[in-house]
Length: 157
Length: 194
Image 1 (cartoon, rainbow over the protein chains, first blue to last red):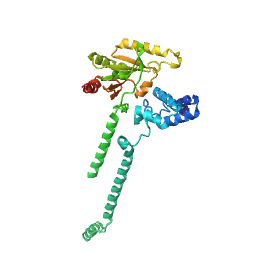
Image 2: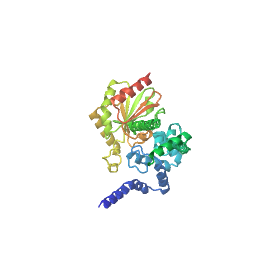
Image 3: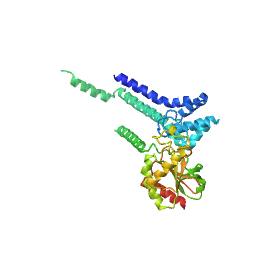
Image 4: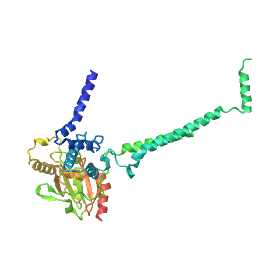
């Protein structure tokens, strides 16, 4: 029962996601449609911010697909189309924003975190091994005497 | 002991970072148009379909461009603020009616006979303004939303502050609250009008 429910939900969601593709399939030029698909997969829909323009059914995404289709038809290059959208909506439309001043933290952040992690791991391991070395060092004569005395006390008489 | 303070400090820093992140508004996407000339357009004026308006007509004035639509729920929310604003006078408020007919989720545009969309849009828009009050100096009709794309509109209502030289100085996405009006828009307009 549960399985059937999950299966039907999965099927329903593929149907829902397939509709933008259908819209594309109905268009005349398959080469242009392929370019549209490739381009719009790189672009974020600003209405449902976690969807690409290719996937989104939001009105704005439909309009933007129409706009991109028109630009492809007019022989514009991919970079011209991307520039057109960035000029209007900013770097935020790009799923892979360019590396520059205000995106430095975005691109560099994970690497910086990894470096901090590796450095602190190294510092921790060093400290631990030096502590262990200290523990394994032979006891001083005085300490040996104390230990012997303690052990003797424990021995059954 | 010292080490635990360090870990606690790092944790606190993470909490602060996440708290700031969670309190940011994800819809507040900085517009690349701020600081750039307002995109040109030539659109028909509401109730005067044979007349057009372009942003060049406003050169020499500080003005607001407010994107709205009768189907937009948040526009209804900000509308009284705009009506109050218009009563003060002095600053032209131009309405950009965005996809009045085809933007309405309740209308299937394919069922509207060709040539009917424009008159229907004018009718709906003027009826809505008659009902809720008209704060606009004039409204222009962006029937298919192309001008909206040029202005980077992604969620109505949106408002632009444009200076005397025709440069966009500010964009506000979402309804204008009295706080936004008195705290951000009015001071900027005052400064630009000097």
